[in-house]
Amino acid sequence: MINKSYDLMIFFYYFAQQFKNNHIMNKILIIIAFLLSASFTIEAQENYKTISSEDNAKYYSGGEPYDVKKFEEPASNKKPKNVILLIGDGMGVAHIYSGITANLGEMYIQNFKKIGFQTTYSANDYTTDSAASGTALASGSKTYNGAIGVNADTVSVENIREKFETQGMATGVVATASITHATPAAFVAHQPKRSMYEAIAADFLKTNIDVFIGGGYKHFTERKDGKNLVDELKKKGYKVETEMKKIAKTKKGKLAGLVSSEHPTTIENGRGDMLIKATETAINILDNDPDGFFLMVEGSQIDWAGHQHNTSYLVTETHDFDKTVGKALEFASKNKETLVIVTADHETGGFGINNGNMKTGEVLGEYTTGGHTGVMIPVFAFGPGSEEFTGFYDNTDIPKKIETLLKN
Image (cartoon, rainbow, N blue to C red; front, side, top):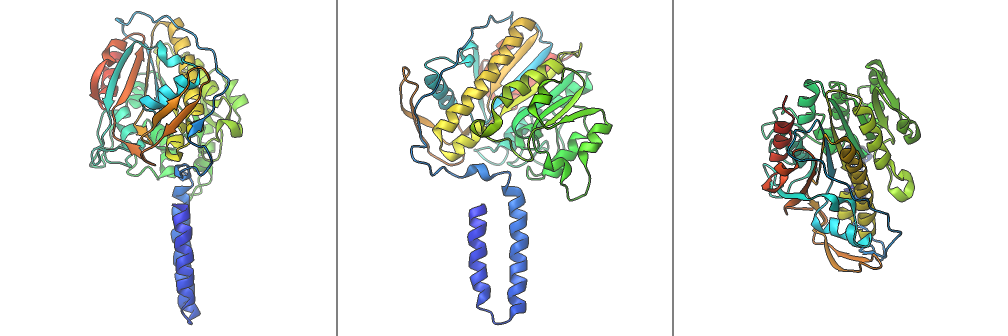
């Protein structure tokens, strides 16, 4: 979009040059500047969708494998006290198998024995976006692409995090995107458009969410309304931190971790193991609540790798997400009262594996689209209540199943 906007600006500039009347030309340029500033505000959050021009972007040559532990699953016929919902944004079956191949045949996700499939279509499109699917996963309501926490008639719908908050449970949201981006926003906010980042940030102040960690600091501070929401968060009792080292040291209380101005960087460019540490931190804080907790964790950038047709990026992000799943499983296997669910909001890229090698970890990917697809998405469950997530169902059924299991 930025590139298209730039091309449009050049076109109109030379068009305006044809006018000898400088007044007319200036008016045209002012209009262009306004339109570009508006589009840049939105596209700064969406610029990860550009297809990679790197040589061999579709090829992952292998890397250092990580060790995978096996965890004993607690009895599944009891009611869970806690729920950890992990969403690998854009993660389809091929994404998972590419990660297994690249790690020489093993990932933490293979600990799951209860597996189902969910359909993802939105209220207005066979192929959903993250906002509509996030809203479905959070609230159990179908809505139109682009909607955050509202139904197809733009009426606010209560999400499960809000419901559990009302019941006295601790709640949290973690993401490797801006915390105001579509999926995390769907578990907190209620806005007709996903691009309303500042309004979404303001919605955090309307909740009593205990922990949220991700990017998006600027949406709380550099606002058109002049408000500094970080100051307001502090007044509400939140510890606000921008460095992962300080975030990871927090053991209790309310925490707002805003690690970057907009989206966190890639792993190679400095993000490191942020998702793993953020998830561990959130679990440690939330587990202090005797009434139990609900935590949503998003591996956001798996989706971005699919948009970019970058298999190396895709594998790296899938592994990062899988290691985070491993931390959730480690906690659940010891705690014995925690249901862990792993799924995705949709598939991205129409990703397929044309070749691979389990001994070297090589993966050769191929893609059918730069966007999302409408294929079914796997759902993995571990712990008390996990048997409820086998079979075939719709994405709107997932929060309903969780709510039924956690009803007081």
